[in-house]
Image (tube, rainbow, N blue to C red):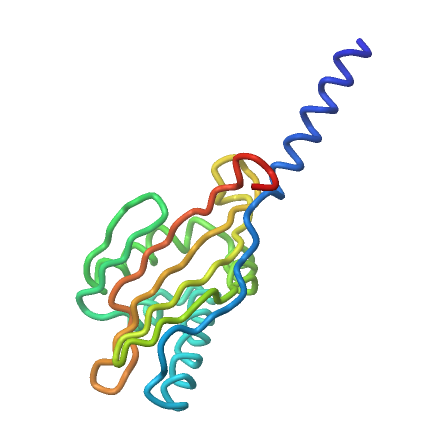
Length: 174
């Protein structure tokens, strides 16, 4: 009995330590040179608007922040092409599948990783945490959000978005 308790305790301890073994979020870095200080401010405002719309489960606004011909790829490899298809998916599947508190928590954890300024295109890499309800093993989920922003008719929009699950380290410390 004692051996069973010790084994159970060690397995629990190992599972708890592995849950915390993600790689750290890298320090933020800019690449390239923005066209102007205004460009940086516009992109900052865009990201805030995106996070607010997502946090509020506002599918119409989230979709409007994407180009008409957006390619949006979720963490499972499912691809949606076109703003209208994305909006339908957000309204009927994704947003109803989770509580508002889960989206608010995820957007509050948003951390920018990098920006690549390429003239009228900006590539953004960011990470966030998602609630256990969306993780495969019921544990905390870390997600990478990658956006390709383009300026069209004076407005920034997402032309491509790729969402990836970040896996824990296989071996802690590596």
